Length: 129
Image 1 (tube, rainbow, N blue to C red):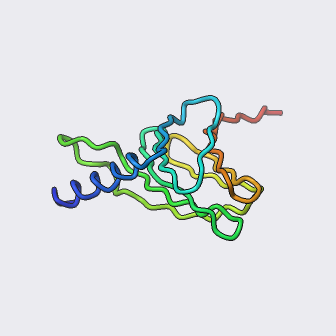
Image 2 (cartoon, rainbow, N blue to C red):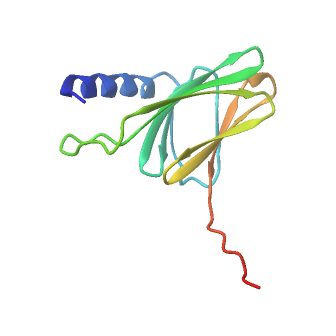
């Protein structure tokens, strides 16, 4: 990735984070939080960073989320940024998984708010018989 492409990506992602009403959260938070349509979302999901927003369209939450490694001028990113587009119907939820963390996005009735909840994953070990 060229230096100008990195800079452009940083400027665009930073712009989303500076939108009025932008929220900042960590996937380590025990409780979720609510956002309204077209309000910026900034999240930490394990080692990844995510920015995005959702819009209300016909009673569904249309979520756009960019997942990327944290920016470091000295280190090359381990992976390319990824854009995720999801449609979450009202009253339902969807989950986005990163390598070391997951988030659940629940769309309220009428798609007036979206609740973002970190998902705690535990290793399961079956008991031998």
